[in-house]
Length: 402
View 1 (cartoon, rainbow, N blue to C red):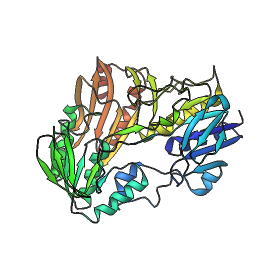
View 2 (view 1 turned 45 degrees about the vertical axis):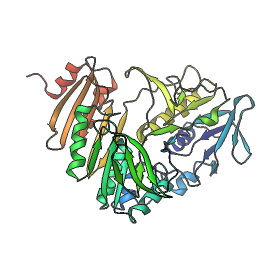
View 3 (view 1 turned 90 degrees about the vertical axis):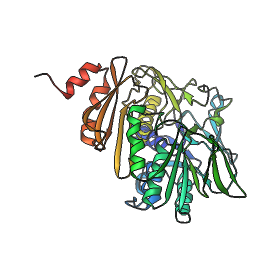
View 4 (view 1 turned 45 degrees about the horizontal axis):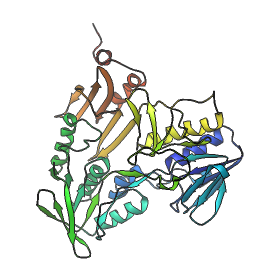
């Protein structure tokens, strides 16, 4: 194997490149990215980057010298358009092709866009998206944020920090419902209200109205919210269309690239990592796909090393999922899974004080740990999720028997 191509120049792509070099691969290593800039960090885009408060000096994940030391054939501003495993080739949108003895698919996901062409309706996924939203913050006094997942909730918090009047619309009964049990999600409902966000829960968006620019958001209950600035946080779609005809198996319903426990796809010599990888996890009831910053780096390292290792020497990828969010100066952390859960118990602090750690269980097993403003305590319990731990055993770790 002398030529390896990594499709995708984000967090996963960069970590795959670093892992390959650290593992001793000294052949040609090509990194393809559809954005013109070098790999950068996305988490600050919805937080510090929007507010300008505590903003990092740069979004770049690595300094130029560190990236140059990897000796990459960088193809930035170029999108992968086809994979031809039989010919050991990956085709780019400029008509060129790159030889590929091995491939790591790390093209990630894109923001799901609302069905409107009106100006003033934004999504937030890339640095370009974030720059446009930040500029709009300076020009508008109010904003409607559609969707109260992590991106929507963070944008709402950032907009309040920037002094905008904020309406947050969510079809579910609580924010973060897709990833956090509603019994805990109610805490975040009150957190937004504490910060004077106009929350519209349990109602969807029927459409956007205006002339050439959005002027109002029409809700499914017939009401309308006047707004000339909207940010939609409607989730993400895996960037897998370019794999059509390649033989790489895809999960149904935009579920990403199907992988085995080693991050290998259905095509020999082709692995996947990051937001689009869909793989079996023994402790979470089947297949999972994670759109988390931490997962992108960890999975890419495993996929890259497995690509070089071959049969018999590969490592299964069974991480403890980890995600964090910063809202209103408070850190939210999640280990494992927080939904669905049939048991929820606060084991430290209290929801009323906005400082707590909660255990989340399913079928008698601990499946998640969620914390607000409780970083040391949350991370203490990561080991309980690394191996199967019963609910009773988890609680015993909090209150050991006398």
